[in-house]
Amino acid sequence: MIKLKNKTALVTGGSRGIGKAIALELAAQGADVAILYHGNEAAAMETCGQLEQMAVKAKAYRCDVASFEAAKDTVKEILGCFGKIDILVNNAGITKDGLLLSMSEASFDQVINANLKGAFNMIRHIYSPMMKQRSGRIINITSVAGIMGNAGQANYASAKAGMIGLTKTVARELAGRNVTCNAVAPGFIESDMTAKLPDKVKEGALASIPLKRMGQPAEIAKAVAFLASEDASYITGAVIQIDGGLCM
Ligand code: NAP
Image (cartoon, rainbow, N blue to C red; front, side):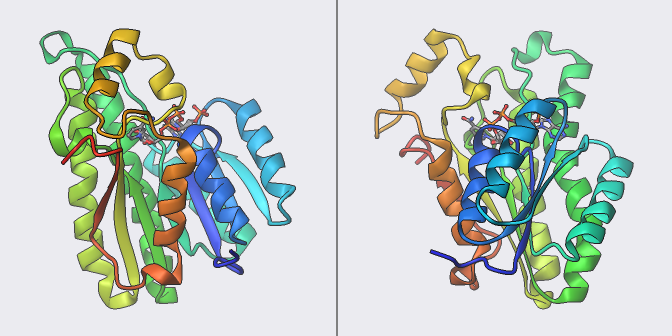
């Protein structure tokens, strides 16, 4: 269904995994899409090519979202190229797992910076343009780890919990300008991020998921596209869990 015609979306980490599925779904619904990636240029170019084949405008930008200045420059570039940004999806994220007992300061900082500060940076630079255009959709990809905690993920769970606080604050600040801000909290989803988990961890996770399977990136993308559409006009400050029943 074409629900996002004439909309421009920016998807961070849109080159691979969940972000790629989100970019493709938004394009399938008619949106022009700018994707941000960090290091894997080949993946970004491949995704960009797939988006262009869907008859929408698409462009990939290399940008470390953890950098305030890089985020600022990239948002400016995208506004220059696309004219506006209607939908921001903060999806870029990394993990650096380990028990807190031995977690390095660098590992804590890197995960907070990529996940939480990255989302702050992007919102900070898009806040004013969205406020002025008196419409917008911000969707933050958090995690059930930010709701229930997860042994071995003190850095990641802290970042994802922080994103929930950020989501609710932005929802309150921008509601008067017709800008909504929501979070989507995936459980275990098949992607490069979960492929690197040890089999034992995956088996343990599967055993605690009522639906008894991992989720697919496209199952996250459908919810994001809904939140980005007019159909979700009265939803703001919400955290939507998509986890096969893992966290309830
Ligand atoms: P993924 O396959 O590892 O992909 C991560 C994406 O983020 C890539 O496009 C990567 O770009 C980009 N990225 C990473 N650091 C970045 C940075 N500093 N600046 C800009 N882009 C950056 O991960 P995924 O599984 O799709 O996860 C996507 C999001 O969902 C993450 O926020 C993750 O925390 C969240 N999530 C995932 C799961 C899951 O089970 N997979 C569960 C809950 C939440 P490059 O390829 O260029 O490095």
